[in-house]
Image 1 (cartoon, rainbow, N blue to C red):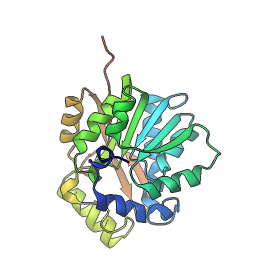
Image 2 (image 1 turned 60 degrees about the horizontal axis):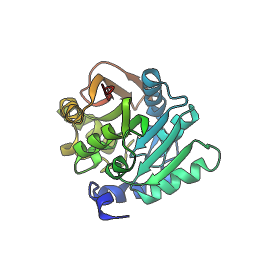
Image 3 (image 1 turned 180 degrees about the vertical axis):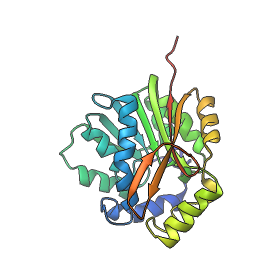
Length: 239
């Protein structure tokens, strides 16, 4: 891997997710929250872009939880990440049972140079708040989508409520997320993400809240974007 591929990555963040690689597919382990919201994320994308037969790129795929779900829904999926051990876990879990799924250890910016406009759908879930320059990832995602293609992001809003729920409660009180997973200073306001998307040529279609009750294990979409949120953008058709 060359230096260009590792430029927009925090080594400590990569090490953090490397350590979690072996636990990623344990639905009752430290990634339990991701397992519980995964069907919700899948439905959100499916209802807006229809996955079957589409070429999909999952940026920051980790051990492949969302990539695999999209492939099982009929999409041809490429998952990319820079965490070597997480990708190994992704490949091991998928095995040879999902022929439309592949993984690459490559930066989004590098792949954007290689395959501009190469995907019908680009997803980037719970990843932007873990990199030094999230706007660069947003730009790469926009370049990777074909004209008319869909781009989906999810992140955490930078609000006092998000600090209390995503860090104090989730990491330290309820311990449903590994301690140290999030850094409040890296949380991203929807207005910031929209600004980066528009600068990259994306049109905002929708922003919606993602609400998770760790006590009841319930989750839903809609309403406030004060904590977790999903954003749907689209690359305009070229004239």
